[in-house]
Figure 1 (tube, rainbow, N blue to C red):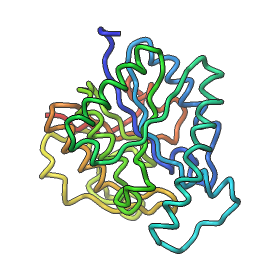
Figure 2 (figure 1 turned 90 degrees about the vertical axis):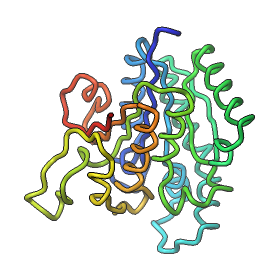
Figure 3 (figure 1 turned 180 degrees about the horizontal axis):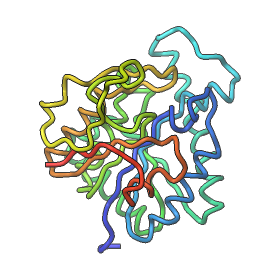
Figure 4 (figure 1 turned 45 degrees about the horizontal axis):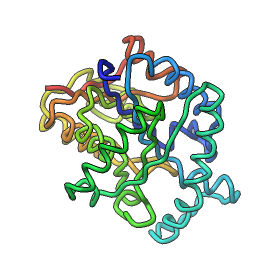
Length: 256
């Protein structure tokens, strides 16, 4: 285990639902296939959104217009075990074992909690389990409002000393403008100064996801502060992580 690199992968709701309102077991199976390949070279931590989407699917609810935090917290509480059950069932088919870790930002501010998180993750790796981390939405309202799972991935990567943090999105990476509305938008392959791209950050347009490019740039700042490379990649294609690692698809890399 010691000679393996450490990889943190964050997957958002838009990827897990393939842009629909339902969790795609096929997309989670795609993740499992990739992890089965990657685990020989990497110690993996998965930061996963999707609890609210899983709850709405289970309850057959349409997307609600209400933005009440309590409503979304309740959906998260309902959906989290459902999402984990899907991960467990699908990953088991690939002989992969998963464990759930729910965290808040307060856990990263307390040294005892930080030590406990680190010890737990290392123990899970030693037992051949993949930690699946999510914000504890029932008590941490900022994640639901601002999409902090991106920043959570950055904080996890910083804590465990990751070699690489990958944020999986529904766009190839960072552009000079929104490519969906500006045909002259140019793709940015590499960023070495956050201040040069901060003005390009936009909010999410997803009905299920809560993060946007702003939260991803915030996550990149966390990673770059600790000399951790971070990528933004598109999760729409099959084998998106392994393709990015093999440089077969475009992505934006943040590194010093």
